[in-house]
Length: 399
Image (cartoon, rainbow, N blue to C red):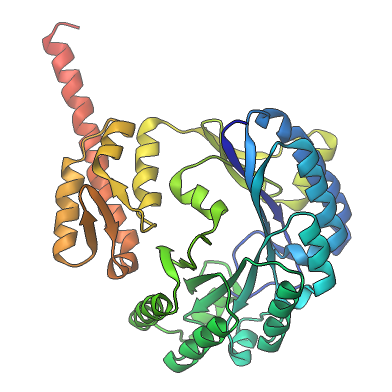
């Protein structure tokens, strides 16, 4: 069996759109679900042809709200994937779910099809906070949905939580985390709220609505890291925490630079030495797949230098961090200026090192975007300097 591969299937349908969401998802388009299903099935069959030498060890069905798409369609998708692709014996199959769109019967059927991990959007344990961002469920529905997951004998559950929500306080966030811990998930994803341009939340903020500021979010984050560690959840990425052995296999492919294939409208891939994405347009995607039109939105070949940049950007999101000699060996680039800058960061308590491996501390994770930006600038300058030096030497040698 060949190299392992992750498969992502995008389901762009939701019961309703949350105020903070900028993912490609659509509410009120149930009338197009059947045609989208036909298009996605065609996409699966077509794409499997170029992945014959790979074995799927991770399948992730995301959205949107896949459980809003319906049990019958999800079963058909999984049957087709299993028929078309080579499968690892221990494949991890994750299904994203909202609490208001699952029940034990549905989940039992999906478990029989191989679904062995659920990622559920809890977001908050406070009904007022949920209502404030137009989440379509209550906290009690979260409790009931988690019970349904366990009744279906699915033993790997992630709960998504958001800190920094409108009206959220330190006390209400602590209460949300404690409620989530009381539900005993194997994995927790805790995200700071970001105000994305073009969303209803951005419009609310533009009209003067106040949200918890950066300092308040930072305090909530650092408390969360400490609290979850005490509860036995190991932080393995900026926003992700897991019981031993329960890290998300699919998301680790993104962060570790391993190949994955994304299918469906707006899906992204890193496969065959290229990054490419499909159109974020439901009608264009359906028409393209069923009638032979163009569905690729962007596509580019990734150079070794770009992979070196991705190595810094993605690996530093994880507690695995980066290794000096791994960087030198894989990308043939000078680590010295990066190492010097990391040593500066270490003085501030933003990074720590073990031997030649560097990783961010929780305080460093809070500043990771700007710190990684500094490292990438150094890398670019070092690469440019090396190129100019090679040109100078060639000129001196008479080439």
